[in-house]
Image 1: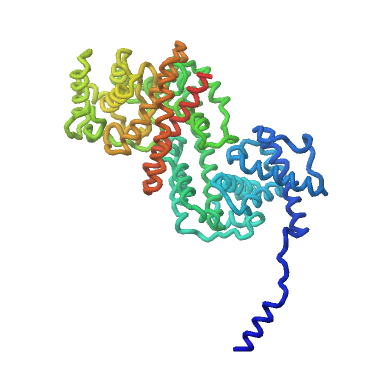
Image 2 (image 1 turned 180 degrees about the vertical axis):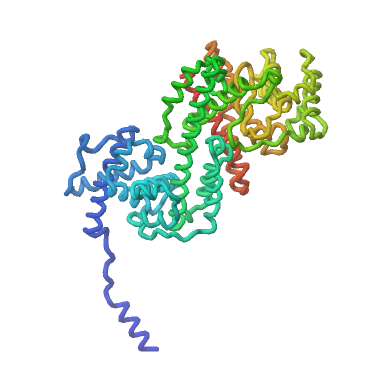
Length: 533
């Protein structure tokens, strides 16, 4: 007992060595070397996005042996830029700078991985930079064959020394997403199924588990393979557009109604060919940004317009009302089953018959508006042509009001249900075409509940904005655009909250669908705001 006490007293009396007051000279030298290697990337970001003044003249590197003041000032400059730079901005800088040096890219990735307090923005940058590093370090043969977790781990080891190829159970959804993407032939299918959003939801829900070396390897492989599939499908869509233009011109067609894509009702095939041949894939921008999403959706809308025109041209004279041609392998959309599950204005009895649904919609519309007579219900349902849509969108319809707009959209969808095999449907409002996804159509014609109501609201806000944008372009009228933008801003805030609620409730499909619809609304808002400036 006394021996233990004596020993303890001796230890207490022994002078303690002071812990190191800061980094060692070797650590400081390593920090500076990293700062010099990454400076070309940071300086390009600072100059391209006006984030901060450059500390050195253009083309000049930090000195190899800095003074203490230069060292501290430069590291503070890097830290400030880290707080401002976003992942999509890294993608926008020229590849000749980002990929100029393996050491520079490796140092940048390590810089973010070694941060003690990482934000979601840091996570997105790590996510991007790891796949960038993999693409740089992998052999040409590897980039074009089936890529395994072991392949990715091996390439990443210089930047991620603990890279682990062990499959993680919670990362298995990534493999299921990739399996579905392999079977797709068009970006429409990828965007309709919301596969990119599903992958992002998994990443968002991972928390700190995302930084597990095995998870980083899994997400890097996922990102690269999705990017490769994305490029394959994009080329297929561009090829389909070119072939459709060729086929129409061979049949003597000179103009096409491309309002769905934001062009005119009589766009020349020459101009459409020019659009296709000069379309540039905006991979320097973040494909999750609404403006870039709009660029891809416009390409898909052009393809849909051309194939619709081609399908109408190929229809037999005895069947002028044949449905529009559909994109190959597009997901099917069930025919409407229960009109009573549509907005409350329907007030119909349950029925699985499209003919009965069309009949009820026409009768109720006549009773409510005392307007012009409607076409026979059996004709509207059995011949899904664009005639009923055109009549429902007549100038006398007041679709500038949200409730009237919702009613008009519902009437068109329920009267002309989408044919099986088509993933998207179009409604016409005041001579403006609005493209709806399969889940948005279902929200109008076959689904009820809060999630369907949210989707209907998103479609209405987008439709009102599309109509007001076209009015502004045609007549310069400002009032409807201002009102539609005000509504859209309020709705976007609401939708963002609803998406977060769906994520917390683990309602992945609801979060993905409403998230995509909200992004499309944001894309329309960006275009409308440009007209106001």
